[in-house]
Length: 149
Image (tube, rainbow, N blue to C red; front, side):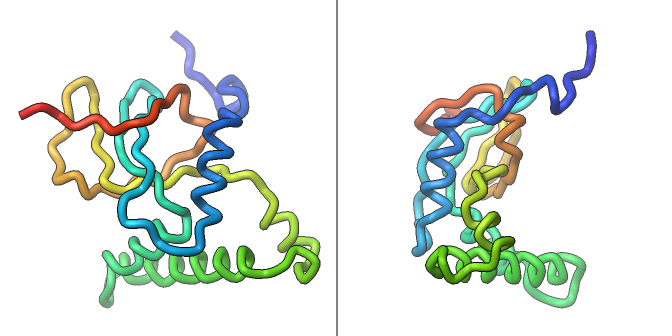
């Protein structure tokens, strides 16, 4: 059995990319994201898609204080603020680099309330946050899987 490289995976699913891009362009946080199931390298994930900037913002609030997590949270806040600034500006007002960044298709998907199934559910409270590369997703469907009692 050979290992699959990034080049073998092919480009990300265009429809999923459009869905993620439209969710990323929301300017207000959403409480319940769009429910989705993802098949990623033999693992099934079920969660709710939220905007990338909201994922960064919620990560920053989950990891406050003087710790390594707090440093990461500050970096995430900076990323969130940059995303909001870019999305709030008219494309004509952007530098060429900002223009390219604003129009680039999403490379990552951001989930909250994520559950992992391998082939049995991994015990969790359902509040797991997950960030993954769209190019690594080999299949997906709408809806959310919930393990039975």
